[in-house]
Length: 234
Image (tube, one colour):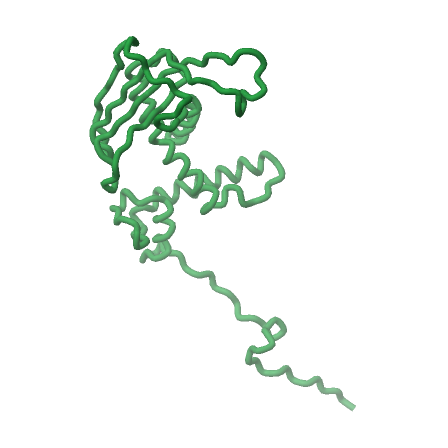
């Protein structure tokens, strides 16, 4: 439950983040007369050295389009903190490009900037988890009528997800040709679900036993002896 609460807190924190394209006309270049940018060079296990620079009290150049198309009067000034993020390398030897983020707090401190880009990276894990809930575990598949039914179904999905996490040592790594091999403690829930039926042992899934169909329920092409004709005594 702690991890779920942490994930929900990260989702709420992501509401204050917004990504924009490099060189967009809606964002002014930081003038040289402003204060020097603050930076922190932490090291990430997947991206190497990460450098985050930020400028406070900057605002985008709003235009009368989208949600501001019907705004009456002069457009407001929405101040925030502009964050420039660079990494040493990317997985797969890809070319790392700078990442620009905008935070709604105009006076973000150095530790806030370090926390923000880490939250931004974790959003992919949250999105993939919800996609797994919907597409694989069937979170949105049933047509529920009451809020109580929806709550119980969500708890069942969370329990199934937790069981897949706990079943990592019992599953085999049945990976696709394009997937990299993983150790048992790194298996994702989707790969655990894929490799769990192939495991050997008393925990392995067994097909349900079915009764043979009766002659009355048999298909027309089935080979069953014809029933005995009814006899009538004279």
